[in-house]
Image (cartoon, rainbow, N blue to C red; front, side, top):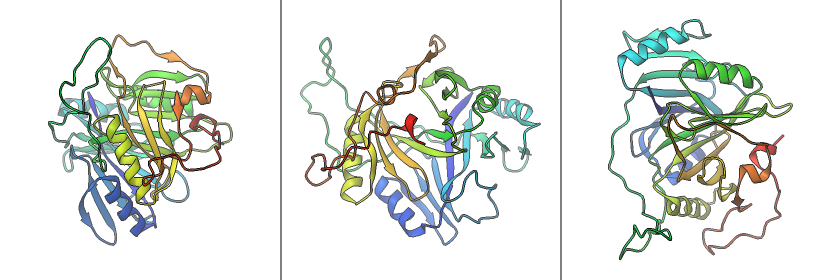
Length: 319
């Protein structure tokens, strides 16, 4: 079974901005040189930043700063063997099980994907309990206020695609399961039958080429989404949209512009699915994308919404 995302690699020339950004985002710096930055979430998932022309990377799927590689973790050697068989005919296939313990190939967009036995750590972290009308789970204890966020893991990646059917078939062939869909427009897929709502979302827009939309980082609870977002606002980083709540996946979100390319998201309270889940179809619309959302974010100092002109643009409507 695929466990989830073990690591991602970005490429950019905004070197100093990227270092400041990921420090403010709440990642732990592991190393920093002129060629490589290594960052880590609380459970050990890695975020690597390299130069755009780095010869160790596969060609980029789009111009400018972007995502260059996704490393997926598995539980066992047997699962790695099965993935090697499934990927054997794919472009860029390399079987390095005997040396690096990895199998890699290019997905239909040309994005390099790697599979390895997961290196993530088990950690004991608890989000705040929520009191509902019928059950008080937080007793004699106020809910927390976070000054900043410390992402627990890399939750999912979202790719623009111009090959939706081929991309869905490719990832399904590796064991991914469709959770929900915008027919002809987007596919939410999870990497195991039981787990979070999606680990990858493939979004096809008319006239839009393949590329990165965003990478999501999971935090403890909705309060950390707010605390992390307010901290990023105080640090001067630009909100793209949020905070808000998705009706598909039920997750709370806050999106920022990322100097390494695309957007980046804090999220929490995602739906947990099992083999009993039946995939649903949705028509793309602002209300399908967000139950509610604040355009322009919240000012980190005043804790109020800035006076901004609402764009009305949502992820599924971007051109």
